[in-house]
Amino acid sequence: MKKNPNSNRVLNPDLDSEEKKVEVSLRPGRFDQVIGRRKEKSSLKVMIQAAKARDESLDHILFHGPPGLGKTTLASVVAKEMGVPIYVTSGPAIERQGDLASILTNIESNGILFIDEIHRLHKTVEEILYPAMEDHVIDIVIGKGPSARTMRLELPKFTVIAATTRVSMLSAPLRDRFGVDFRLDYYSEKDMIEIVKQKAALLNTAIDDDAAAEIAHRARKTPRIALRLVKRVRDFAQVNNDGKITLNEVEEALKMLEIDKDGLDFLDRKILDTIISKFQGGPVGLTTLAAAISEEIDTVESVYEPYLLQEAYLQRTPRGRVATKRAYEHLGIEYVNPEQFQI
Image (cartoon, rainbow, N blue to C red):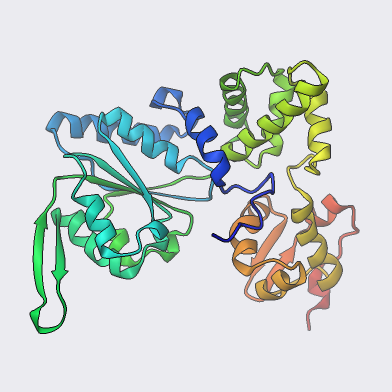
């Protein structure tokens, strides 16, 4: 498997294979342990209570939004609150129709199938998922040519919970089969502080309030990044302060990691500096920008851009990306309005 070139980036919101076991062990098990997500929790609690009262499976659920915001966590909590098993897979892992058929025929009644990165599901596999979700049946073609025949398999009632960071890539027929979808947005700083304290406690690490606030501020409103920063700062504190995380340890550790006061790292600053220095602040096309910083187009668009756009360091225009006044100020460069360069 090709290694993700951004897997060593501290602020990368994607989860690498080595972190999965640690993150899973620290995930909340019940809704009362989930910080924030008040609207989503309220709706899900009603759905679960109603499904239990009718002894039925939940309606199919779609979670979408940037990576690292708790889509997988909510899916596992829903399964525990329902008291049913959860079967976890991902779009890229289901390569053939038979792979999905094998999973579906082994699901217990009212069980949950969680499909991560569902936007990467093969179209041929997607076609047999439609009747499975809607009518709880799958049609399997046996044989080839004139002798081929179709066999229909009845399935127990089950729930598909899917997660995606690219909801626009879902086909309309697939998206329509979800009874409810939740857009998970970035966390507030208040909730992030509570998340940092929660993760530190689960790691048996003492942390001062101002240190927790500083980590939360630099964690890009993303719990996964917050956990990663807590772990890195904990190591620093273990060596320098008997394991207790204070504001000084946070500032020194994040300085070593080149994460500045606003949560931008050297790659974020490189993007902004490239747009300003090489392209007079923009606009610059995504393909050109990616080539200028020697990164893949999809990586720039899905990993780096979301937070820079969210925090108004970048703007998307019909002609390309433009650095905002805030980007100039952050880099300490005199602001020049890009419009003066337009003809």
